[in-house]
Length: 534
Image (cartoon, rainbow, N blue to C red; front, side, top):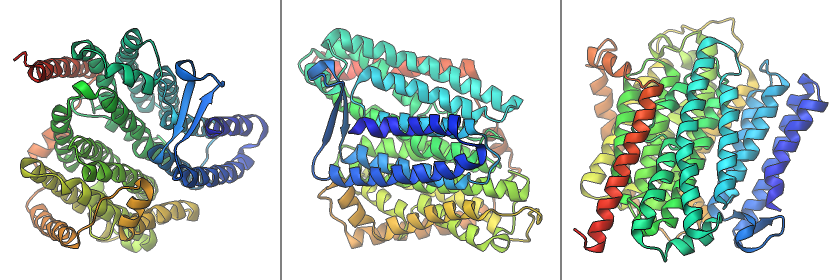
């Protein structure tokens, strides 16, 4: 049954490319995507009764390729179908070819396959093909900048994924299987020293895919490509990175005897803090959003490594929330850039007057990402901070302050005299897509506690007093941010220098090697300490 969810989008992609005209393909794509969304919702409901398992080809045991729909994977698949549906509606009137729809549907099938798959090599193949699809979509508009950034993305991911390939080869040598669950059972019986190298190889590749510092420079590059479709940036940030996050969770569980939770906790905090600083220094509207993608992923990784049920639940809910509000922000940014003919945030003014609906729904997404009370980000951040104490708590508070001050600056485009090109028409279908996502941010905040319980079946409790304290922190942070921005000039030389920080391909390769070495050394020391060798 689960194989149909992977194959159906790919078959639809081939049909659209071979048998439909360019005009009809858009309508067919929306209808087909709506059907996929309905079926994924049905799967989501069924998975609440118990895990759904499919073994491809009928081979049982370690010989089969296993697909599994549990609470988390079925939720992410449903979110995937919804976001691709809204992306299809958003692109209804764009001058796209049949190739675009072919690539988008194949990409959807690959992401669903990764969420379901429990086979090492199957995940490798799906990740590589998805990377190739993304690279082609980045280079969809054939201009020098798009071609250059697309090739950098492709080459850097090729380097990183070799670590994963060597890692799973080593795991296969140790366990004799490519099935994740069976390998996990064998790994639990092995000596810890045997696991350090494969763990380091695999987690280095996944840290790159998650865009963790210092491996994060590729993500802002590709999300800020000037002519790349806005829907591609939205899906890349909202869903594509989540595949790596889910794999991160699975491999951390598999290598439980030697997992480096403390190291990844620190890396998550550093990633989030560095990214909000980089985001605040930017003037390019898409670069601001791109760096906040790495900031939110860093926040999710931090929550996942805190070690408590509340933090884990909050991190998973935040992963879903991030897919919603970041997709809304990227899609709205695409409309805004087209209206104003610029990506400079300081030159975009009067959006509230130009399009009240777009301004309102964009504001909802901003309130979601900043964790404003009654919006979705406030619920997930509440649960993530519930079990955080001491330095970690204040680090999370500082990260959220950085997000708030960055988006206070971003919100300046709502006010002032309208500087847009009045001749540019705002397509209703685009506004509908953004509006749906914006209202989802509000809905998933107001009913957040009930949604968390329904999605994950957890026993976490919600404290009105604790939530009120977090709301008070938000308003204090907001006030400080508004006051601070009055004294920070856009021409500040420090921000200018920070804005210019970037890594070329050579720097990316060096950072991958350095990350691998640090992870190996830390894991080796941690293993020696736990075994009494130090």
